[in-house]
Image (tube, rainbow, N blue to C red):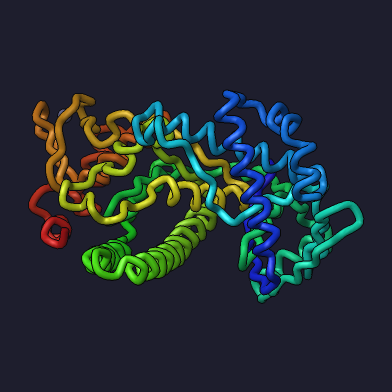
Length: 394
Ligand SMILES: [Zn+2]
C-alpha cells in the first residue's frame, strides 16, 4: 500500500506575480470553456495556447495546468448547480492564489524549490524548515519517501510525500462515529469490546465564540464595509487555524491509541450524503448557524494518519446507523442523547448505538447478552449517572 502525507513548508519569496499570472490564465480558460461549451482541458489548452504564449511567455506546461484547473472548477460548479447549491446564471470564478507545480515545472531540492517559468528561466523558492519538516526531508534524502504533488501558495508550499508501507493485519477493529460534541468509538478485539468518547466541547466552544464574533462584525458591515471584510477574513482564518490545530491533536491521539492496539478504523461513508445531510448530521436547529464540524475532515485525518502507519480504513453505508435498534433491528427516531426503541424498549446512548450499528453493517455482530453486559459495564443505560451528566451538559 502507498501512503501519502502533505507537509506544509513556509517560504518568504515573493511568488505573488507568478501566482497572479497563473490565476489570470485560469480565469481566461474558464471564460473560454464556458462560452464555447468545452469541458476537455486538452481542447481549451489547444485553443488558447498561442495567445497565452504571446501574452505571458510562460512555459507550455502552465497552459496545460491552467486549462486543467479551469475545467475542474467548472465541473465542481456544475455539480453544485445540479444540487441547487450554486446559481446556474452565476458562472464560477477562480480566486485562489495557488498553483500545483507539475513535475515538469519544478525541481524539489529539499531546502528549496526551483520553478521553471520559461525555458531556461527559473525562480528559486527557499523553504523554511523546522524540526517537523526536517524529518520528512531526511527521510526523502535517504530514499524512504518519494515526492508527490507540490502546491505553491503565497506564503507556503504544500509538499506531499509518498511512502510504501507494509499492510498491517489488524487484530481488531474500531467503529468511529463523529458527532458535534464528541468522537465516539467502539473497539472490538476478539470477544472484548471497549467504548470510548472523546470530548469535543472545547472545539464546539471555539466555534460558538467565533460565530458570535462574526455576527458582531457583520453588524459593522453597513458603516464600515472594508474594515468589516478585513476583520471577517482575519477571524475566519484564525478560527480555521485553531479548529484545525485541535482536530490534528485529537485525531493524532486517537490514531496512536488504535495503532498501538492494532485496530483498523471503520467509518460510515458520508460521501453519498447530500451537503445538508452531512452538515446537519444530528445537529439541532439552533446549532446550524455555527460553522459546522467538518465530519468528513475528521474522518480523512484519522484515515490518512492510519494509512501512513499501514492500516486500511473501512467504510460502511451511512444508512440508519443512528436509527436502527441494535437489539431488534427496527427503526426508531432518536431524540436527545438516548436512543429508545419504540418496538422492543431497548435504551442506550445514541452514539454508542451508532458505533454498534457501524460495526454491524461491517459484519461484526453482537450477541444480545454481550450487548446488555457492555451497556451495564460502560454505564450507558437509562438513568445512569454518567449518562445524566451527558444529557445536561449539551
Ligand atoms: Zn428494538
